Length: 350
Image 1: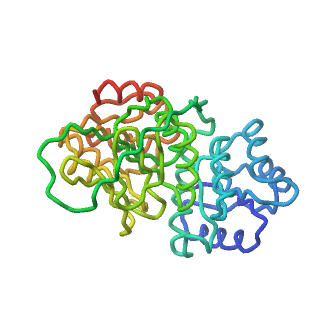
Image 2 (image 1 turned 90 degrees about the horizontal axis):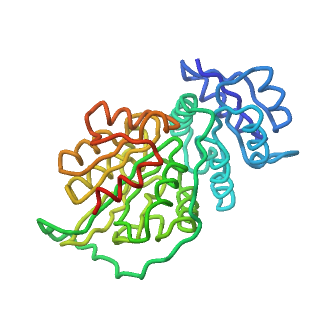
């Protein structure tokens, strides 16, 4: 049984979360707290396995409380935030400080039905996460690439061969920091990169903007028809699937809605399967930390199409779920610790 403490100043949020979680046979809400001071006492008394934490609360904000908690009583924390630009940026700072998941507040991007599935999924992922996060390095200096004209949206038949390379990355729980670790250690001349990280809308916008500052190449939230080329990385927007397409020798992305896959939209499997079809042996697939099995089947298709594929190893994962599922299917050409993945990427994308 996963024991959960809900920390939020909104009585409605506390009520909705508690009612939805009570429907899950493996989750128990052991208590709620209106602010961090009440939460501190209940954490000591109730010893929850997972904490859900709002960012805007009276007496002490959630980010300050999280940083204190991670220093003195580290535990899995899910950030619950409204979908505003400022809150999205704060949520990213919270994940850098040790939170493992992020969730939109009810009434923003989820219906109550969606919330029940999403919240329980994130709580299970958080419960499986390692409480102590790795110390990631970053490279703040960056050089912007020269702008290249956007590819056409026309669905013309693709050429049989192309020398253009594609790097596809998928991640979930713990993935925001893992992706940052990989991207900030790649050179400005890196091949075109397409990324799926399980996050809600607007959080992906803020995340792409943060990566754009840290990385030595352009990073942006993908829009339908965006061209993909060396020196550019595209991140799937929250609540939309992203697929790689090819027009002649040029690559672009299709951003579309559709059913959730593995409870996710965007889904890694959708991206990886499209990369297998459109890029084949000219692509590389990387599956990073995350709960569940999203991406495993797609990575296998990539490998069968001739792609070199990498799975993050168990020791460096926050949650060894998605890479484990891929490895069990035989989808990984190799497994490697996170800090070695950038070197493997450049070695095998020459």
